[in-house]
Length: 372
Image (cartoon, rainbow, N blue to C red; front, top):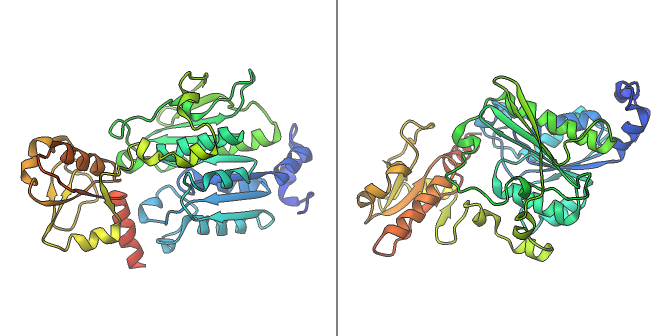
């Protein structure tokens, strides 16, 4: 790779940065997990900056609803794998860098080997199960982690690593245990202004560059919160939680045996989850009753025969579906799981309700794929 490249001329001329810092970037390797709203700006700016090797891990496909904020993709690419298309875009931006693509879902079985290959990891995911898995793996491997999260009009950025006092700070020091599924909405349910992930993703990219080059003051062991409605910004110091080390796996074996989806309420062995394609086939059967447990007015509407019973009303209205084969659905798949659990716990007889994995979001993506 050319180390005196006109591409980086503005970095070479930058006081306090220069060729030494640029060479550090060129020799570095960064894994970005998630190529969505946060991942897109992270990838663009790390590629442009000249990070020598970039890994992109994302198993998801491009959907129409992504395009309001995921600016690496185009309408014509709906249904394509995000990681593959993102790699094409950043290689076109900077052909000098090495880009690796991983299209399998990051899970306890593969996270260790994946994260171990890179100097630093960026968490650009959107769910608690992934965040705990990534953080735990980075702690066990003693790898730095740049974290970002968004919610409606607010975002967070932090660097989880060893603090100046020698204490290793992790995501579990911020959230020692996952909140209940009904306590926190994600952007699928609550929405997000499209420019916000761009702003937070750029901050994450900035933290990666600062960490690798030793430029400026890193957010190590600190949490930055940003409100884009009024530009209020707060930085708080993170301290070691007494519970964090007790709750995380002790070694690779325990990590691989941990069911993060179940711990975070995103899966339940007692409830059968069906994929979008199977759901579309099942609802054609008169024996199956589809029940939408979203609140009235949530979009997109379901254009197939179904009952509307919001989760908040389900306990009082179970009699309406007690004797039916029920297939619950919601926006992202969390509330439908809760509905199925509630029906199982309150029914006098043994019942086997199903839940649509990924909710209406997955259903819309599947329908988009079929149209392309």
